[in-house]
Length: 358
Image (cartoon, rainbow, N blue to C red; front, side, top):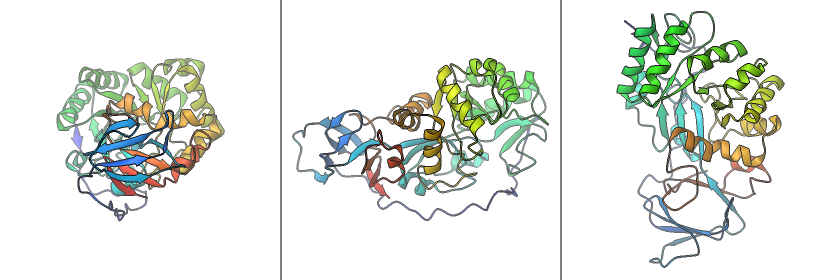
């Protein structure tokens, strides 16, 4: 049988801080109107918000004297989605939301995450990585329940089934060398995840491990690989996805080149920070800068944090400033299509219609 570990974490990472940045107001947001701002990609438009949802975008509609929030000379973009976090390891959901993150994908946590209140941050969680006996990360930072140890294919597939039953929205399979699931077990776990309509992410940071992950059916690289990728491996991920995590893994020239090569092949690029290993209190300035340094355009950077992850992870009411979507957006004092760093210092942050920060 697979053996989950539920011991207190004795990882080598820094102790997890408490979340002191509580939101300014957690009550249901009243009706209000953002007036005079430029919505990036749409132009000048007012935004009417009611009960946390965008009701209209455009000319001011007939409304019952809503609260007016003047925003002339400012720009509005959707709130960001961080596609790689460890929110149990470093529990700061309020601080992340107040800094501009509407949703996140947790790619390794004990099963307690499925009953953890992470509001106002929406979290899609993998729970523990499905790994080998003594496999990554159970003998290092993840000794406190961040991996489910499996002895073979049947146990790996059952672990996926069990995690899905607990509420997992994605499955993570490490492919790292050393003690790792054999190929049959990786394939069985990935196939079972796909039967359950779950995407599969993998910690695979070399060319060889990334190729094994691709052959096993992994959908998304949890990190941009840090060693040179062959054309064969790049081609294998052409119709898949990669999460940036450039700051967490050194932001070297090889890693940046891999990111751009994957983008050029057609892979979906998703902004992610490996929060827990890093400590973003919102949108990580270093990650945005690294993405730009790698060669991503401001429009690509914005999409990687908003519309692309919303579509990829099925967050159907996030990623756009449009009627019917959640009123989760940032008010900026610069155009992020000219200066992508503008998203890291928002003037205001609204999550589900509630002003949280900064």
